[in-house]
Length: 218
Image (cartoon, rainbow, N blue to C red):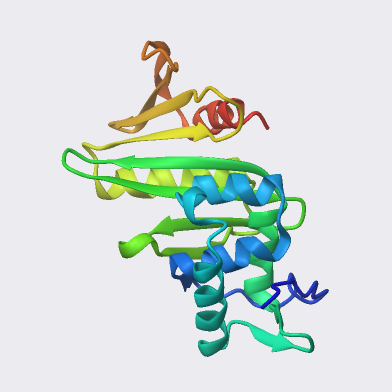
């Protein structure tokens, strides 16, 4: 089967559900709808880099998408997606920016992947067995604000925890470390060599969003 994406003009206008769950084979099939450097980078960010070219997984993912009603097979045996699934596919295969948000507690690390393309901004969160849940970013927020919203909610639920934000572009990853202290924030920069610099305490929400924009290179 040859997988190609249906470029639906209505994809962005259709209502996006709260979240859509995708198995890892389904994501591999979607990433292969529009092959290229950006799709490969997204595959690496989704921890699927090694499986991207496995034809059995591509076929299995395509079959699963069709069985779940998330894709259709059109003339010539090609896979077509539309609506929210097309939006997720477009974001992953034409990404301008991928940002990883690490949500830390004393005994656990969770992650959120923020993916931004020219037309779509989505958030993805991993679940068991390399599955991911995708959701649309709130349109009234900038991407940096949406990233901060995730961190703030995590630290409201886990006051003793922390968070880290890093841009997954380029060879070196610099992380912005964030902790909540009383009614303010403490942030610092974690360099690739492990050094922690530029620590600032007593910051308000707007000042943290400004630091997030810097780490994201907005």
